Image (cartoon, rainbow, N blue to C red; front, side, top):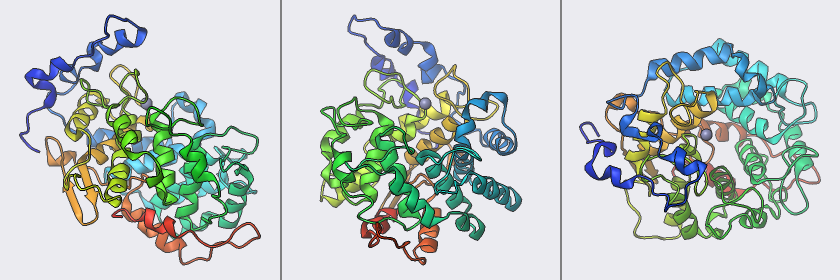
Length: 416
Ligand SMILES: [Zn+2]
């Protein structure tokens, strides 16, 4: 896409400027701020600041500023956010660093199964997802062998609820993130059994509301993060066709902001770089679900959102000039937004369905990132490698576990 004129410089772009219908709110005032205007942002040519991001990420693996103290219970997340960003940038992880990350994550593994937010803390589904993903990105024998699959299965049973949902930790809250985290780690490590996810499908389906998106628990407002989690969990369980796919499609494409080009997380909210993945990442899942349903009008080259506009928003508005990415101009960089802005940029660059692969890289070839797997959000070859490794091992036995789930392997195929 070299030489393609930028959308935000086109004459009719200003017509997309937000209109508040005469009802001024805090959000509507913020929304018209010049800070959200891609054409007024940092760089006249959208260039991915690779070297700056690399230096920022590399430093983060060894040293974090005081600002990260509040994430003391999310330390495996920091490993995942940084390692995944590095793999998208195609920066290899030195063997000694990879081994140090493995040893750190092994200290986060709970004696009762699953991973905690830090050494000595209680196991929790969110850091369990992050730790398993981080170990699969490293992809060495040392990394795979850290995961105690039998105890991980025990932990998943300990958070399973009678209605099919999962709590995030023993005694903790229920929401649809937990179903995704559980399905993701269970499928990657080959401990997924139908009984473990009994009633989970119907519980997730109840989270889709009248808006078309999914909420955290049945009956609440649709939200990008929860919608991704619920949909991706259903893909893993092979039941995504049971969603109202057309309503979901309408909801998610309406979350791409006509003026900014990025996505909002919920109706009437501001654009935010991290939804570049949580929302745009739904489009590959939806495309493939509709394809499997036999939809004939699907493109063979692109997802059903404005891929160029999203790339413009991320490259023009979400990069810190000294490395790291962010929510929107004026906000500070962090590893979470760095990971999900880059993940969304990758989704916007790569179309991939069966044997069709089409790249749409804005502005210059150097902006190209590696593709990411739309279900697990790690690179597809790392998913394939983990499945190959863990599918050689038997599903842990026990009176609660039974047969492996055939849908898990299919969901894990990036081309399926
Ligand atoms: Zn955000």
